[in-house]
Image 1 (cartoon, rainbow, N blue to C red):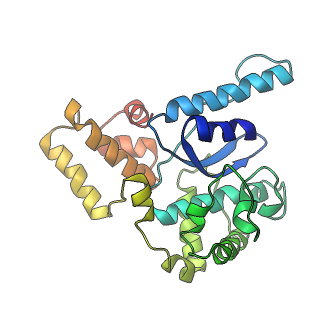
Image 2: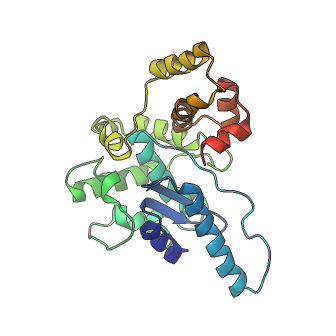
Length: 253
């Protein structure tokens, strides 16, 4: 899987920020540089399934269902997602500290020495401090704080990362106050609207009566991404926008 991930970053032009390979699932935090997410994920998981089936002389599907995704347009949420991913092995009782786990990118964020990798840890660490060593110490403080928190399972609770973020902000307010918004916007070309602006955007779509017209596709996708970035479930978004859940998933391919 590590080999496939490394190949994917080059072949599919994906910037990988963090990962964790668990015994029965994986967590990936990355930024596609092209509109090829569906094809990239298909190639990654089908490639691993073929390898696994050959090695263990088995046939049929390997994964229990399609991958799940959330769009992140907020620096603090991005940082919390990275911490959440690296805490997974501890929550699963595989190790006592996240840096002990071999199959994650945690060492890139926590060790004081520079390590070569296909993972770009500099972007997220740069949210914490300009000095890389200071940023790594701060990130390690966040991991240690997270060890003592009760964290929901993201596969069961889609707002698990938002809940972790709220707890970390409450426990370490000084760290989060230093994070300057805007860097993620420059990287992605998108921005996270405040709640009032998002409500105006949704009301504007309703008043124009364009919720089901072809020319509103881009506007609808933007609103859907904004809601997903806030931790809304797909069925909640469907209710808010008057669309089917299948339509919501089609927009996010």
